[in-house]
Length: 425
Image (cartoon, rainbow, N blue to C red):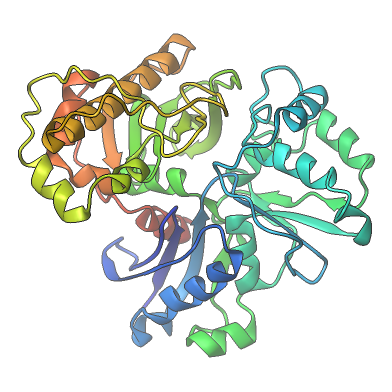
């Protein structure tokens, strides 16, 4: 038998899904980890693989990992981390951002306080670390996790490398970034491949430890939201104008477009998407810190379910929130200093939750409207991925705001999209 495994490193948890050649799910596993502690990334990776049935592990052909976009780690030549990791929502100071803006072209997608490139600039300005190392490997979360399996440092994919400055249209680093890198010879920019492209065979000691075949292939990774897009729509020729909202700890919007849109003013960027009918298309969108992460501050899982069932989604809430878990957003308002707006808070918890869900639906609609204004292909249909897809009241509220046909997702787990990628090449 031939099996393919996708592993999703999301904001709060890790999931693995194994499929067969027909794309049928055969097994799943999951575990928790601390996204801010890279040491837990490794243990979680091994745990979710080891938790799959032995007979599936022993017949796994290929593994692809997705990770949170712009979550980064700097390593030495032995793959050992230098300093702490920075996660997707960590914002660099205004001073660092202004430095990055002087290097990159105006309104480039890296001109954001949370971009991978801004974080690399921040690291190089940390004089306490930089002079001690002659070689620095700057890796994204999925890059480093792949390295743990195949053992090759300095490898990335063109989805994760986008926020580092890689040009997915030219399939190479632009001149401005290459010229900057010449001034920093200690920095080794990753070699970039298409998502799922085989990088190497699993290391023998890891294969033996996890009961994987010694010829198991490890593919280049992708981002969690791109994997979620594939999980929802599949890999068989999705139509231009197909959109996916990933409702997890954050909210990510993507629409399949015939042209790229990149505008750092609003946190909008475009990922390359290979299509068998049209060749190169683009996943245009942005990621907001608004999302499910704010809800556990006020409700338990049981309360969320019980209170959601008591909401009338056909009635508008008069509450106007901007429900961020902490200061700063990336899209549709790109402002690292944007403050959460969570008041007034009514005494009735049902009314409060209704206001939160309705405010997030309004922000989602504003995000899609902005994408259309800036020239993305007209949206024809919207799928939903992530845990928020299970909340029926939220879905009905969103439908009222979006007024675009809502489609049933094939799957809502990003790990399934990563598994489809593993099977595709």
